[in-house]
Image (cartoon, rainbow, N blue to C red; front, side):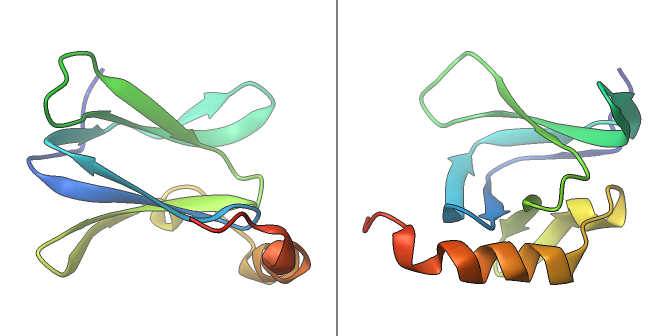
Amino acid sequence: MSDRLVGGYATIVQHCAVFGRIETVVREFRVGEVRPYAQYPCSVSVRFVEPRKRRPACYTMTPDNTRYLTVEAAGRTLYDSRQDVPCDMSAWEATHRRFAGRRPSA
């Protein structure tokens, strides 16, 4: 697997239309190449390792218009999955508004 972006400590933020903003602090991450995934013509995988953990994990972003991902560090956005995997933001906003009152309080 060829990685396009590799980095150290950062925060991976999933912007989910249903569950809201989900943040994961990581000590290293790798953004993979754009590839087909299941029934989707394109997807991107972001592999990461959380602090104090050895085993890597992965988020795979697909063009289902319910979530997109950003990688942020030091107040800057290092990566935005919408560059590689399209997300219809009007559909995302409609879903976000519909589920806004149903989210659990953190």
